[in-house]
Image 1 (cartoon, rainbow, N blue to C red):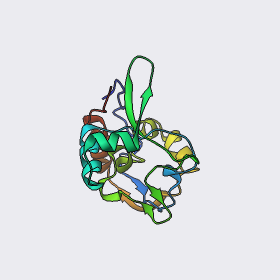
Image 2 (cartoon, rainbow, N blue to C red):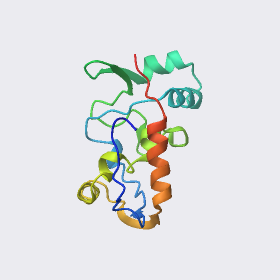
Image 3 (tube, rainbow, N blue to C red):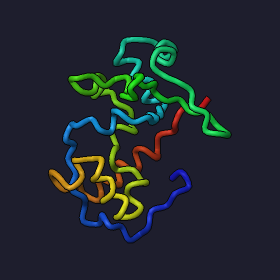
Image 4 (cartoon, rainbow, N blue to C red):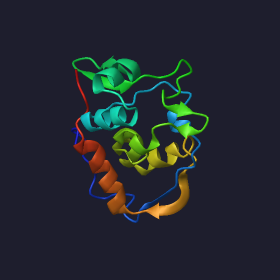
Length: 151
């Protein structure tokens, strides 16, 4: 679990209300990283009909995290994700695990205050159907079970 442990008393015991509003705030305007897993690389390369090496050279960069390096998607000059367009995500069906599991990341689920703070930047928090505790934990596990690519 990446060295982080969740408390047994989870504020999301009864689930959390969330529905993506397709605002693209999580994919645009701010610098950031979309770290890839081996499976992400395979899926994205296939989606773009290219070899993994070609995909890496065209769409990825190496991020030095001090002690280890990871592979991330590049960004456009305005910090939008390389795959974001006016029509939304160009690779939505093949999007990386980091994107598929958002916003159900440990960093937002350790404390209820962090989840509530997320609502200021993610309009889907507090909207739509209740996502069950089981589904939330499935998304947490999916992200943690996938090994990020390192160089």
